[in-house]
Image 1 (cartoon, rainbow, N blue to C red):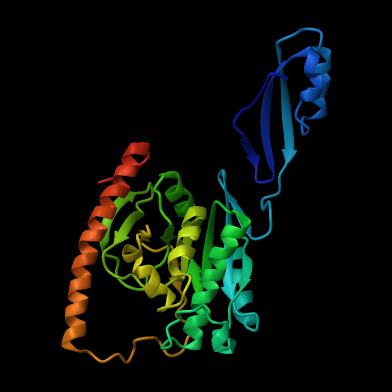
Image 2: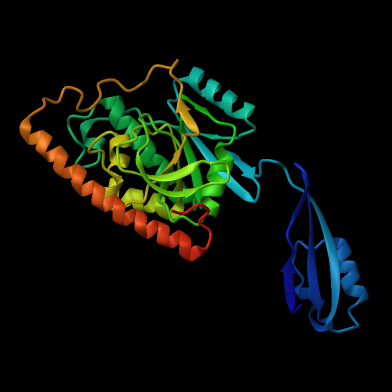
Length: 326
């Protein structure tokens, strides 16, 4: 066999794909054919074996299930693994979120949440902020577990959802198109609890914008990570020094590339009470020093985000894939 080239796969039905393989046959090396070559291709190759370098075309018909593996959904040509963070004891929430996703045609894998209140102090990562509540620590470490899972399995991209959300029907399409732009993000936030302000990076075909935030969007109801991004998140944010959404809001401080989509495609379900009690910093007393520190941090953030946005837009232009890059 001298050459094996695959032509594009054509989708016929959700369960069928039709593809074809082009073989340039060398009669001296018939045995080198691909192991998954269909019987028809082998038969044609044998018939042509006496005629060197004659192209033989075989048509491959394969039955492919809609969901190729547990916890993921095929969208176009991208297989997206979706995780849901859920406490093992909270079966009602688990059933509700899985039913919601199933209604959207999405498959997900449940990632057991960490119960921070049950962790002894010696089990916490060194440097964990003592002011965090058990719920905040558990939430943070649950997201760390998600990053670790992505790295351990070598997943190119994956989405994580908390168990108190509603997803827009086009969530996966937005994620797929954002990936297709070639934007080199570490994470892409699909949700925001506050109004979105920031630098526009690109506009997708459906009008959804990719924005690098200049103000804290807050919330970790849903976001997408890349494999390299999961590694970088583990390097920079593996220790709970603040709530997890605050840590992602400080992306610019750690050199992480974490834009978000606007409008959000994942929203918090207001009918479900939060399982996190005692928000860090809720009772922090306001002082002149803290006010000045916030002003200085905001100025630093403004310029850091400005230059990061320039670099990201330059990457999109260089790739020639940045639709609506401004």
